[in-house]
Image (cartoon, rainbow, N blue to C red; front, side):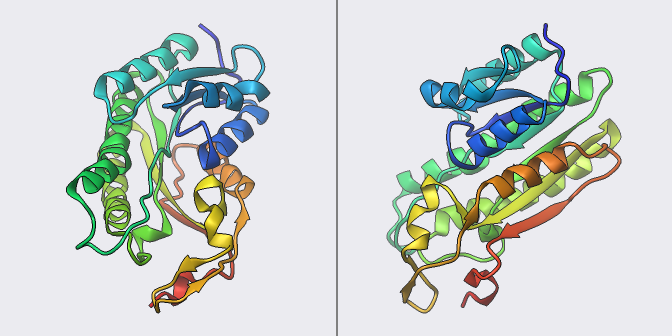
Length: 251
C-alpha cells in the first residue's frame, strides 16, 4: 500500500480534456491520483507526468457497475482510502431537436452522463463513510447546460440538469458522514470536445457564431482548489466560463 502525500483523488474521464488536465495538475501538486477511463493508452499518457506509484491507471467503463466497483477497489488497495472523486466522464451528442433524437442516442447520453456519475458517486460514498477517518468530497462536473441549453442538445441538457439534483441529494445524504459534494459548471473550456466552438457554433437565434474560449488549466486549478478544502467548507456550486461567452444572453 502506498501512502499519498496529499489527497487520494479518483478522476473519471481522465484520458483527455478536462479529466486529463485536472489529473496532471493534481499529480504536479503532490496528490495521489486514480485514473479512470475507457482507453488504457490515453490514461497511461495522462500518467506520464507522475512519479512512480503516485498514479494508477484503471481502464473503466463508468456505465458498468462491476467495473466501477473494481476501480474503486484498486484505489483502496493501492492508496488505502479515497478522499476525493472528480466525477467528470461525460458525452455530448450534436443533433437536432427532441423530435430528431433516437431512443438509442438518448439512452447513450443518460447511461454515461447520469447513470455513470451515479455509479461512481455511489461507490465513492460507500467507501468514504466506511473508511477511517471517514469522509471525503465528491465533485460533479455539471455544465452551464445545467442552467441553460444550447439548441439541439436535449439529451445532454436533460442529464446535466439531473446532475444538479444528484449533487444536492449527495450533499444532504453526506452530512452525517463528513462527505461534501460540489458541482462545477463549465462553459467553453478549450478541449477536443469543444474545438468547433471557437470557429462557429449554433446560437439560439439560429445564427452560427464563434464563441470565446479559455484554457482548460483554469478548470484543473479550480477543481483541485476545491478538493483541497477542509471538509467543513464546501463550494456548493461554481460556474467557470469564458468571460465574454453568450451564456447569460442565450435566447
